Length: 205
Length: 338
Image (tube, rainbow over all chains, first blue to last red; front, side, top):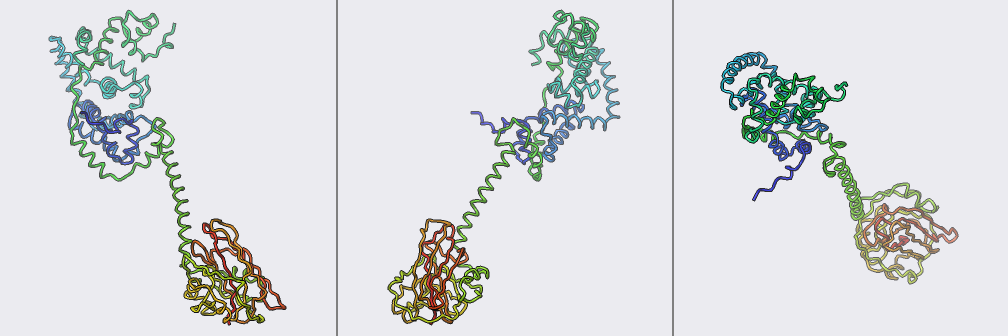
């Protein structure tokens, strides 16, 4: 028999946040379980797939909830607020790692061209996936974050606009240009995407 | 036609997601072609968009290290309570939360509880104070004393503050048959001092069942008061021996259930002697709880003195009963010491 859920499982994030403000540990646990995986993977992808960094950033993010729950603006959805913090943490990290990032991007670009040449020859699905990942990693940070929030975290345009503090139109525009950029970079795989759509949806799910 | 006004330029994603190129209306197609070169690019972008939504690039989601949670919970336990501000933030917002979780309701409820509790507390405390008051020192203010004597010209001018002895809760009120009392030797009064007003004793009697004089001029001792309460019914002999002539003409009794009503008792007797060292003892018997004069508000006093006879012909004292305890018996005796 399945264990009965704690009543807090049904509570809204915002209500749980209020309870955390009253030092309710169970509320914190529920909220952590709800978002830890999302945030960990978000950091992992945004921070160069560095697991150690992702771990540190996840802990730091939730530590903010523990230490300063009063900073939460209750008029905002908790999810958006949490992603905003994560987004800003990543931005700060990008600023810190600016020099390293440029070098990293250069290195990636070089690898990408090499790999692209190889993939042109193979034209198979796995190479397409590999090249897609690489193309994503070549996007600038703003586009990467926009892409991550939209296609990986599956947030709405409105939520992304609140997190990134830009207009909804800007978010849509960014997404469209990301799409065009990726499409341009993966033009050599034209036909693969159509094939993936036709056959691959069930595979990827 | 200017389609820019009809379509938000950023809505192309929506068109890509939901329509093939050949399904686009003319104005939609016109709009799309502002952003893409041709049908080929449209279809290519559309394919890419679907691919991205299906997340083929996505690796398996990683599970965060369990140690993160442990450390956070440890930190949580160590943190001091500091969430009051965020709680206050929700007083007027978060309409979706349950009403009993909304701080405004919680505060209102807490206020109501405090008010009700406070009222109840003071009510109980007041009742207790009535029970305890007999054991406390009670001062009779100068003003009250003055009120008491202001209409009695022959009485002493000063009523000093007195210590009122405690009285037992249950009082045996002597049934004094006034009519049976013998005639008291008449004497002319010179000065009559009201030295003691005992509100809760009863008639003061000594060990011999005689009406007792105060132990001192100013103080009625506890013993006397206690004896006065517990003493048996006085006899004619006792009264005669004390050469006291008195007659309680009228004692009005109020029902003990009646609260906050005016109790009135009076002495009206032309035979009340007025002599030196005379003392007036007014004894009252409360039915339910001991009381003292301080708990009885003397609303008025009235003494009538017959100068030709030298007697106080009537004594009327109006009092308020003690809240919650009506006066069952209130007996007044005018006593003249030998």
